[in-house]
Length: 191
Image (cartoon, rainbow, N blue to C red; front, side, top):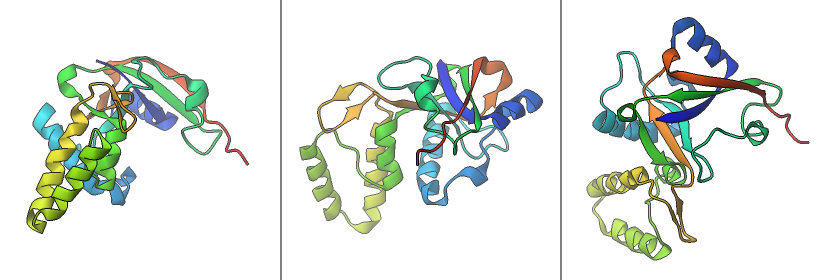
């Protein structure tokens, strides 16, 4: 599977010297740790356990704006860093069985503890049902619902736009998985 990950230049340097890159746990926002922990449990189920010493996944893009192709760095340079920093867009190839794909927009339901739905009507029905559940069953119901983020079948109906932005997670990035790298300087913030 061909993926693209955008990382600060020092991550590229680390990859060159150490031969692999693993996500540093201190980079994880504590507010999102429960969502990451849930995702990690799904990764273990779907792609297997992490290598020893790996706690959090590396993220990459599989599809952006409905297309499976490298990013246009003219626009990406506005999305990263504080301006004037060097970043690397790294094209990688990883075996399909080592990657878990999910819908980027629906991932935000997990981050914000919302239910995933395909329509407004479904959302209202789910919310009403969720409120009737005993407290000890709510988390299980929500986590089961979140598994829908792994359905990346395109759907654009005015309520949801699934499959247009698809992210990938995997346990570690290895130097031998790199196909190409492009460097870019992040844009300066607008005043």
